[in-house]
Image (cartoon, rainbow, N blue to C red; front, side, top):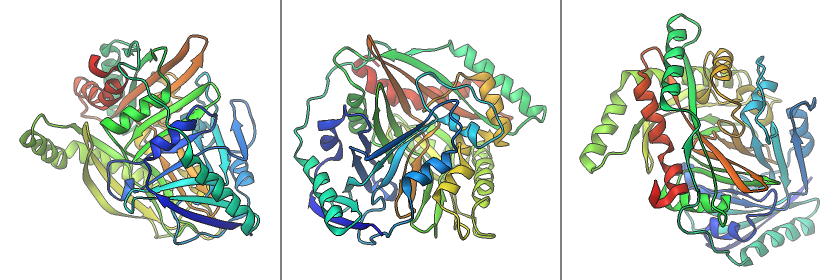
Length: 449
């Protein structure tokens, strides 16, 4: 049985702490912002004691890999943060081909699953304005040593970040008309009865300026448009920066409560308070957006029912409007309780990839997406943590930039999508992608956006 040690320290901004070692492989920040219950905790991680990758062609089961790294379930300290040590990493969108009967080509440079095991971490409580150093070990002395190790990360010197435009370009991969034709094709296939909804994305690409690094992008996003599931992950020769507002799956230790919060329905922020309020009311009253949201709620209820106790899955809140720096979203909540003997790993396997960025029915939507988009890689996958105590939390990787390092520096790709239904208008859906990508464009181009 593992021991756990938790030490308390005065408040520090998590991004400022992470900045000191952001270029280390497997350095990670789960950098909540925007306030509210979803944005209370941030985490900074480094120096995993074990790592694992599942690359295309590897035959190992993702669930077996994750369970092997986690080991037996360990105690949860109720006075500590939700994440008290365990696994954290990236599940690329194409990991879904290992869970659902669909063949997905892979994106160059990205494994299906990349994960580290972290016996030490820093947890930042935004509500109480304190930092907790958490350590796990085979005995009390080892747990204390791990917590002290994490505490020393607070002493690192913050490095300066780049100023001015971070990218030399932020160019669409295809003309807008290509996306509108794809939307029209999906609408036609929906009318023909092939599916009900599919989330179709368009992409932008560019290169970072010579002096810029991916971490500079997350720092700027946190200042400009904080989001509850903002995150940064540095890997060997690659990095992920995400400004996601969307929770994928969460589970308490022991699985007594599991939750998903799908987003479907978007409006831009208004130019003044009156216009902003009108857009909120328009979204709240939109029959199209509510129907689109409800389709995904039903899909997620079905996914959770695969691993939850009979009758435990409910939707306690539908069509809540949540407002962020650049957009308003329609968000619903689905909850459940894991069936006896099942764990958060079973939950992840049952529901991945997220229903809100695939469509309904999920497998057919994935096939349609595959025919219209290049492999997604990190985009629409998940950054997640899975605790030694059985707890889990995870994001949907929307508002996300994927970086690859080559001989000329850092190149990147970002995407934004929209849920397409029978009455979707191609031009309006294309405009929705513009609204969603604007925070990333502004962070990368600064005053040139």
